[in-house]
Length: 461
Image 1 (cartoon, helix red, strand yellow):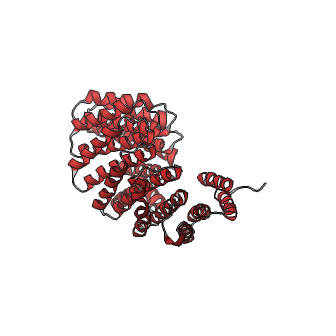
Image 2 (image 1 turned 90 degrees about the vertical axis):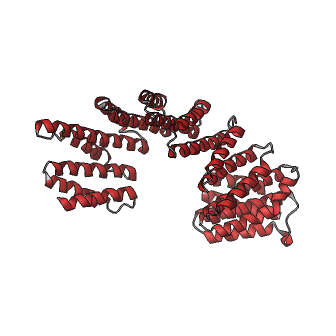
Image 3 (image 1 turned 90 degrees about the horizontal axis):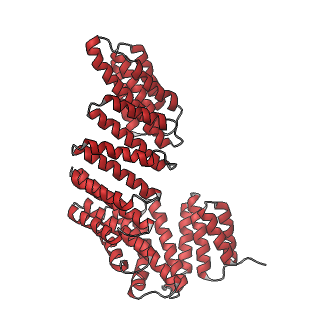
């Protein structure tokens, strides 16, 4: 029995979601051969266009999307039938996305406006009947938000704000989860843009409005938007050095979302705990600061999720820095040792970066202790400090992850500086030469600063 268009289309979309491009291509081509209606051909072409875009046939992809749109515009007239209208809006949305990815923002707006001009009033003036019109309404809301994002990229911020306000005005009262997600995102982006327009009162008001409307939502996507907005609000007050309000906002995040297991939100909670700890420190509340770091470590130190484990490692690092500021050197070194013991060989490279930094900070602290002791003894001991830098080199010198390469370069630089300080210039030169030879070609701003410092030291040796 011959397979139907719907069967080929469904398998093509499933393969597309899994990035099985050749399998998807075969299914969409088969769908095209059995398609009977214009919108069916348009859907098959839309799928093929996605594959062509992924395989760097960008212009051919855009041409297929234009062909698909034309199939849904008999005589150039806006389709009155729901399914064709829904497919047409989808095609224009995909074209807008493709043009944005290519940096062709003005053309993207033209594509998005094609859809908005034909459908925005239609889907909001009366309640749509049937699933196709409801899907069209959702695509239209996404299209309006996407236009706001493009206008932001073009630095047309006031127009972008207007787009988001239009989303909020037209869709906020509709009881549909997809639309409410669009409204929540529009509220966040609108508030953020107010901040970039220098209207911080409106920015804060926007974040508060978002929390008031969606703060109790049980939907994880919406909660993710709300938490991001609260983090943005935190940044405003942190930049103003109003740390009491920072502490309050972090409390708001922690109290509302601490029990959330969804990793983006759980990660935001961990960040809030660390930010709150830092704010406690800035307010001179040292005991609360240390306790907050300990809480993060206790909650996430053994987490199987590296995105949470990394916060535990960072909390120990921040705790060590705070202990250093309080001249509690022994406790500081214990913190570094705990980071190294637990995370130096972690399976996640981001976590290993924190351990590498702990080794470097430990070396610097031991160096400072040795310098103080040398004032009494007249001789500087360097072995313990050098051992820290050597451990960084031994553990991470073959890593290809740039942040870990930076750690190795930094260890080489500090090692060279120590050798230079004690008159072992040949060994210092070897470290500097190795650093420059290994990392000079890496296009990373922080790495280039390290290389520049190495060249400056090289000129002094």
